[in-house]
Length: 160
Image (cartoon, rainbow, N blue to C red; front, side, top):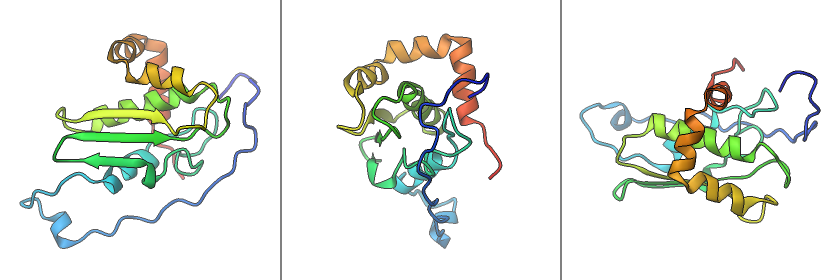
């Protein structure tokens, strides 16, 4: 965040990043069809989305955890729960939108994507979840060039 705006959570807890995923010969074999799994989605999200207020990844802030990612490759379903760092986080919708956009850009079109706040962790979770589940609202948000620029900033890779 810039412009001297006061941070909502000036001193967030920082968590250790998970290790790199160990790849097997089967994982690297392009001739073997391997299903998309929870860890693959977690890897996509954890290291490639930054918090809008801090120069930290969502993994480092424990906003995204592997145990809160559920994939059913056979039914083409991905569900991600995220946990804002504080119960009144005004960035929750932006974070959820960033997660949804990253998945829309990363996954085949066949996947249905559900992004929502971990139950009981945000004061406005019902309102935020309703916005994130509404395809028209998400599409309208992504047509707003200023909002799309902010989402893209969250998705830009930072050097660690």
